[in-house]
Length: 102
Image (cartoon, rainbow, N blue to C red; front, side):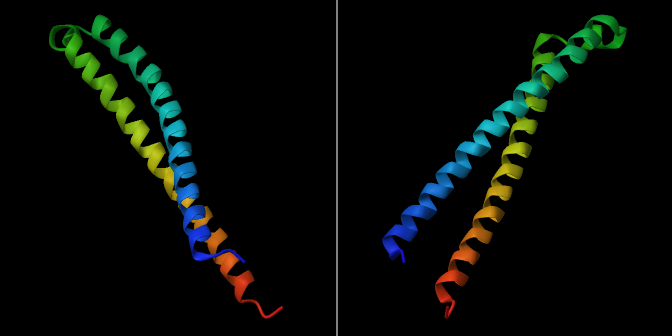
């Protein structure tokens, strides 16, 4: 049976692992979203007359970076929630095992 200090250390370790998973998944999603949004944005700015007249390079970069940033935060948030759910079930199972009369 683990003491309170060990339980606190395990929680901190799980939180750090959760954060690393979220950063990794978010970065991957942002990179994919960057490519997926850059291609149509740049091609549209060159081919569509309205976009050619109104979307300068800064506007195109803003569109691409907004989509990439949004993808990062959405995926990172979902990853954190998934890990928190997994950890809460793990803690619940550990508590039930400790409190079991068997």
